Length: 337
Image (cartoon, helix red, strand yellow):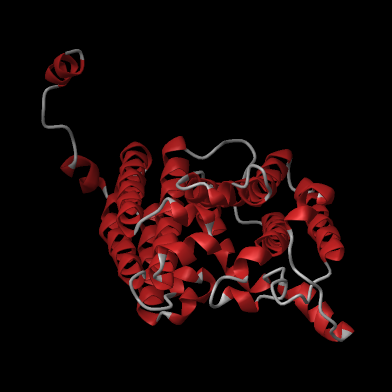
């Protein structure tokens, strides 16, 4: 595969000490981005609460192996992304300082690094279950589709967001299959989680596009920007947010009515994230740095606490409050018109 990819790379290797090169190769795994594994947690919490799966030492071991496997798969994808994006990163005001763009990476060694890290992640995944292994393989394959020409979905407007954000439901599935291998998550929840990821990713694109300022410069850095505008990006953000909350509502009404009380907290969190996208050099462009936003982190913790509490607390009046007020026979007539 490297022979197909190699012609796209235009970086030149510079002379540097071995220690610096080793540090650069470790850097391109972007281990600090492991904070994104937080998106695995809902996949763990839901089966533990809704299915009442027991929390045992065996489960703790599975969780440890699962998180390590997910981290390795993500690191493998980051290595590939770093190598194939180097020519474009050179045209970005900040990413031009990445190791590959600076010529500190041995490209053949990086491809070996990419494959070896993936193999280690998949081997660990196979010790959990075939369902977990399938989700882990899906996460790696999506990284390939996102980065490798001629498909390279990151260059295609809207498809770039959709294919990058699908990592969200894949991470949820990883968490789910760490806990259980007998059932699958509700489709409404998977779609909601996917669209929520699209919402975050579209805002990241908007913030990047707005920060660069010039459409020509933005297009030179990322090809999909040639077809985007600030207006079209914000329109897509509204679409993703609407579908995410609609599907979340469908999940709530069908599985856990108490969670409707968490909707205002989720909406507040999304509003704060939206506002953050307009800040100069916003953390939205660098999600691994979002922990430096105290207000956002505090709201995230409160929202998560409310969400978890509502998964375990039964509130009977919620169901009665939202019970149908129209006669069922009347509803049947409406649906058949």
